[in-house]
Image (spheres, helix red, strand yellow):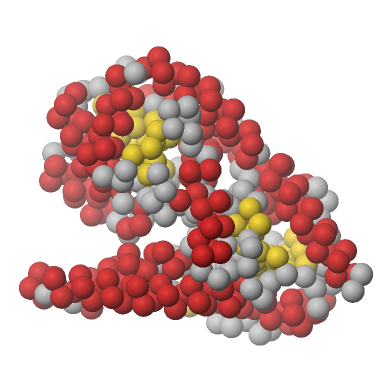
Length: 407
């Protein structure tokens, strides 16, 4: 099959980009031809199958690009003889994918990777540092909070309407979890098919036998290591983990507890300053982004992965951690509820730092039970092997293409 991927994220470091790259590699391995259409990024890699469009920076998150509507993709898609178009975002490149699919008369698959309407409150709050001096923010805080609540509800409603109008024009819609599927149906999107995101575990292979995890991060082998992996952004709610970290350190002492935070983002400076104000900076390690091979070893040597965001559409890092036998504690919400089984391969908490502290204490005090969590976590991860999930998607592709030919 010859498949066109239309996506607004291809060069950034985030979960959607990881999923698209893994899917692209697996489909190529299985003999299919993949053509990527994405906004032009800084230092674009030279790939024969990559078609980029002029783009502008997204003001609030400069790492994201907005493609200037790429009408000239008509020339490329005319020559590629595509069998199917797969849209991975409903914005600029997604509009191009929808336009080209209808123009060429070929099937269109739309995947809902992120429930963007749920992020409006965090997004609007992020605007205020740009538009109001701190003193005004303090004086008008009650008014600002009310304005944020009202505007976010309004924008959430509008964006769900846009989502429904956009995706309902596709021949098939996929979502990675039961949670995402249900939210879509509630908001007028026609019956998304659940196809979980596959994980290519081979990317974590590490060949350096001299690598010493404990020496690398200045951690003692007897330490309890709590891990966080992902972008340091508002919706991840990492301050909840830091408040819990302070409570845990006060309870057990700071000599045998470490919090390893892997990732980077616009909230990095604020979170580092928060650890200093709490006086827990000696127990919290900000690692930044690291290579997959090293990330795998971090999962392997950690006692627990912490997920503080209630918005996860799937939970890619949850599956990655479980592959290495690392249990997960997460908010009982979102797509991770398809993956975590409470007190079997991980734990749930209610989204507050107080309850998270209780769950971290449970981990420290029940070592033998956590060992069984580790074994169950490994078993769970096998369901999300990239081969298994990609085969489900291929079956959908073939069904749509055959149906289109028999019209």
